[in-house]
Image (tube, rainbow, N blue to C red; front, side):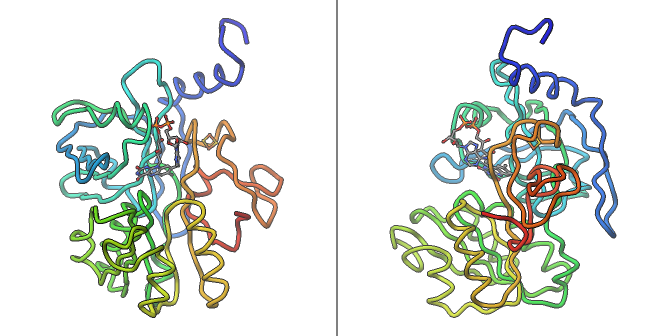
Length: 294
Ligand SMILES: Cc1cc2nc3c(=O)[nH]c(=O)nc-3n(C[C@H](O)[C@H](O)[C@H](O)COP(=O)(O)OP(=O)(O)OC[C@H]3O[C@@H](n4cnc5c(N)ncnc54)[C@H](O)[C@@H]3O)c2cc1C
Ligand code: FES
């Protein structure tokens, strides 16, 4: 490409990223208000470490008024060498205080840089991104919230909103060890079951092991976690005749549907791509498990 010395794909992503201020698409969903996706400045109001490498970040932003459980924002590192946003799910939103909370793991260079930002600093964000869970369709049903590892945070906002609308829920949270971050927060909204891979707390094993051990009953599953867990959840739901809505947290680049860097195979032909795949960042990250080929 003219005027760009880097590889075409990287150059393309830079253009998408720098052009995002003017990038406007409506997120349409039946019965839900629509908002423009936009890049904006926010201010960090609280930032602390909850467990080794797990951070809780609160920011002041008007986007808090729009947040739906399961949606995410893009957080921009400040180091110019890392131009792409890092997608992080909404863990809580307070519309009255205009505050969003995210809980994330410092996994690599971008999130480690973000973990060093201090309260009072400004933070560039892109949002609101993704579709989120449809809470209306589960209003009169019992929901099992399954969170594995860093898939636990988005389930907290879902638990809060389900309680607000009077929907019964149980959360089954899967940890690596006894660092059960966010456990007390969940206990404010629903009953909680715990699994840990090392067996130090709750059921030894996965969230599926915990459900089997506890005889956890429900009508529909909301799940977020690593891909092996989501595959197991899809199989569990099929075996038990349940509907499962799963959030896919795969790697992303633009976050706004432009680069096709985040597609997943689907059962049906997608209206945008016209082939059997779809963009996780726009049509997802939440999908009916039956609709995606994982
Ligand atoms: C929709 C969505 C929501 C997310 N929500 C959260 C959240 O609430 N909390 C949280 O901690 N993380 C979340 N993630 C994952 C988070 O975006 C990545 O961990 C982050 O982008 C890694 O950036 P990095 O520069 O620190 O790591 P990199 O240096 O890019 O990579 C470091 C390590 O992290 C792995 N990694 C990179 N991206 C992802 C990814 N998307 N998923 C899993 N592993 C990845 C890499 O394979 C590598 O092993 C979410 C991802 C998506 C797509
Ligand atoms: S990340 Fe670019 S299309 Fe989804």
